[in-house]
Image (cartoon, rainbow, N blue to C red; front, side):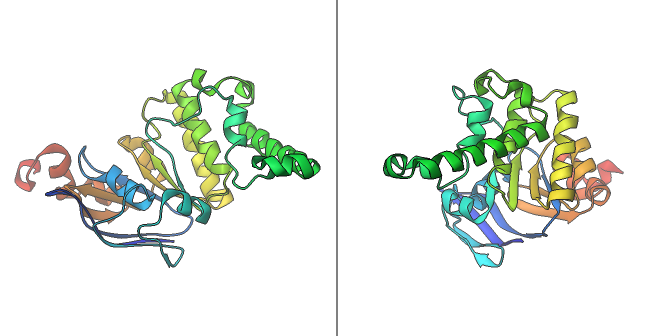
Length: 256
């Protein structure tokens, strides 16, 4: 589904992403781990179109999408969430979901005058889908609450819901566990698992919570200093000497 080929990103004389190459298979949940400063978020920004790589290629669904902007990738089914949720805090949870689907006829002033029945019909369909999404996320009780008043965990669930409103093919999740209490985190894990196994969503997940990575992700890709150190199942990655050194500053001999 997604192929990264020798991806590099330079900021002046600093290379934040250095020759990253790996594939993301359809219907997988790929974990992306590594110490702070490893280049994970920069890599996400490249994949999501927020940055243009210095060199290398990104292919999505067989198409070269290198350098395409975020809004272009959005229309192709590639979307992302953020470590700090980007909700519209003065809109309700329901309204945050309803504004996501693109090309709604109600966005046109002309259509509101001459095609109001189509505008209203589309709005009802979008509203119905938004309520179904809130029900799936177990957030119907906050449907009419301003999104800015939600808890950290509820905001993370709402961000996941916004990706559902787009019928996304590939979702980039940036540290979904950050700032979430354990109860809501377990709920978030369950929803991601259902979307993957039952609804065909593919995920790439940046996370420092190794319990979440172990539960959800296969394969796991570990980065350090802008490079991919190793890719494999969780147990293999966790026990690799390079990974131990990257996280703990140990040499192979020290670890032994």
